[in-house]
Amino acid sequence: LAKLSDLIRALEDDEIVPYFQPIVDLRSGALRGYEVLARWMHPHDGLILPMNFIGVAEDNGLIGELTNQVLRKAFKETRELGLTPRLAVNISPRQMRYTSLPLQIRNSAEEQGFPLDKLTIEITESALIGNIEQATQIANALKDLGCRLSLDDFGTGYSSLAHLQALPFDQLKIDRSFVASIATRRESRKIVAAILGLGHSLDLVNLAEGVEEDAQAEILLRLGCELAQGWRYGKPMPSQAMPHAEAAEP
Ligand code: G
Ligand code: G
Ligand code: NA
Ligand code: MN
Image 1 (cartoon, rainbow, N blue to C red):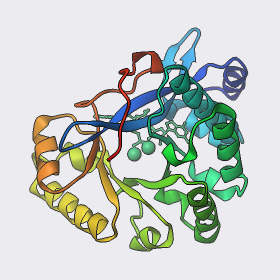
Image 2 (tube, rainbow, N blue to C red; image 1 turned 30 degrees about the vertical axis):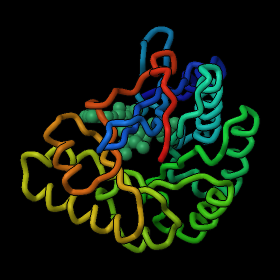
Image 3 (cartoon, rainbow, N blue to C red; image 1 turned 135 degrees about the vertical axis):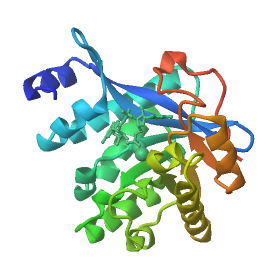
């Protein structure tokens, strides 16, 4: 795990940067946008993954500053490439307790000239546990800004259906663990089919995470899943490696 003093220094020295993982239309393969994922480019240790520093940032009151930096850089770097793709960003459960979150996001977007209606906010269900009222208020404010809301890692954790009902979600992300075994386990396939049925009946756009193989993509397509993300389509990459194609939405 990262040392707090090292993380504080990294934030001062601009070492936390955004990577971008493609999100595609399952049917056509067309690019629909990117998930923004934080990476720490450490001067001695090289690339450090979020599991090693997001928790440290959360526990020490640094996650708001970290998110702001990653967001601003993501907006700036895509603008400098002449691109305005849909960007999906991760918000920590802890951040869903601060009513200043929507204003912070708006300020970052306006500062960098990024249109808020091209922004998707990914939150996990743990953000809602014991916090439904506050989270609902923040979620509504984010929707008022024009952002979309995505329920991340669906199917793990609590998966209370009340959560789906409480917040104005636009999208449901089916957790990677179900996709991993979708081609080999009948149970996984049935669970994903059930999640998709639920998603469709609630008018949500469904996104399958962690798609690595053709067989998984074919099953997901057959089950009616709309969007996909995973190594089959592209790994998280720095903005310099992004294809110079505009991500279009229907
Ligand atoms: O990049 P990787 O696939 O290892 O990301 C793992 C997880 O780390 C993501 O699913 C997400 O939950 C979390 N994460 C990545 N970047 C950010 C970020 O900028 N902010 C927050 N809060 N979490 C992030
Ligand atoms: O926590 P969240 O689900 O947002 O993070 C996604 C994580 O999954 C990131 O750490 C990312 O690097 C990883 N990831 C993305 N695509 C794939 C994939 O196709 N297979 C696997 N095993 N991991 C992936
Ligand atoms: Na995510
Ligand atoms: Mn996820």
